[in-house]
Image 1 (tube, rainbow, N blue to C red):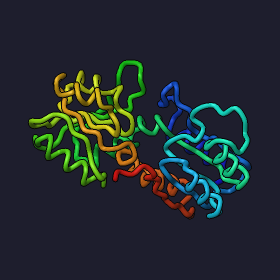
Image 2: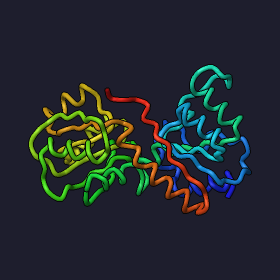
Image 3: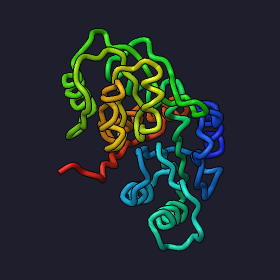
Image 4: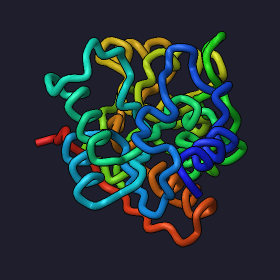
Length: 255
């Protein structure tokens, strides 16, 4: 399978119609679209270390959740983080794919994986009006205290720490991996007793319990990194004999 055929496969698997209107994912770099795909590197983000590994490791494709070209670049010169990485990949012959909000929204994607890891049942999508249906809401088997659920989240996701606002017991949980502030009100409107996301923000977290919903921030990286294993399965379903490597990009550390 070559780059163009892989693009068609990905577009069927992750329809662009699921993407938020502001998003910019898909195929962002393809020096040779006819190149056969034998080696695929998967990461959450295109960091410089990831781009260097993609080139030095002889990978044909770099597949990430977060887009490399999220905001427009003015010139393709080796000045600035994004142009440098794009040039490195292009000159190294590496194609770059990313699947962002459509991978959040698609069945089996980021947020279904997160819901499954945390033991939610009867999971359904939710979103603010006019947004892609990225969020998930479901039920725990038994009510738990907010403090105990926070400990479970930390352990399951391997997060060094989580931020918690609220107390009492909860059972109906809403979640969104990554940036979740804009989904908090919709989670409350959908009847959730607790909203979990990677990042919600100080003031939203502060107000949440007074508005009737507990909140947990577990880290952008930790709530989304589990999707990399799923992306590996997707690639191997398309190209069973491909070599697929997952690279961690936990650049931002809690110390």
